[in-house]
Image (cartoon, rainbow, N blue to C red; front, side, top):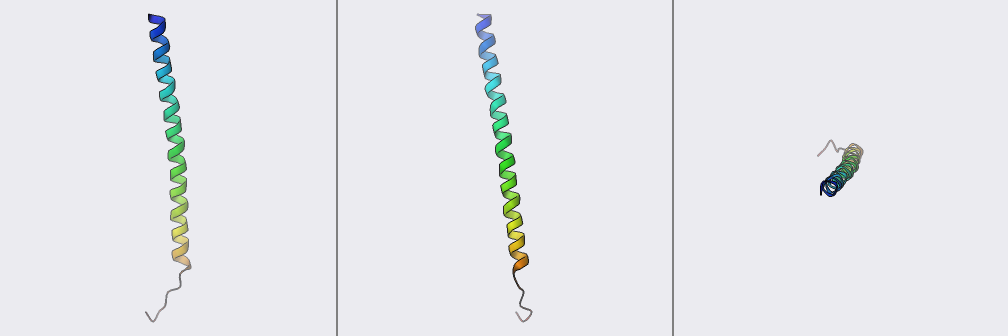
Length: 54
C-alpha cells in the first residue's frame, strides 16, 4: 500500500510541476505580446502628425 501511495503522490507532484512550468511559459509569452502591442501603439502615436491649427 505504501508503495502505491508513493507513486500516486510522485505522479501528482510531477503533474503539478509540469503545469507550473507551462503556466510560466504562457505568462512569459503573454508578457512579450503585451510589450510588443504597447510598443506598436507608442510607435503609431509617435508617427501621427499634429496639426497646429486644430
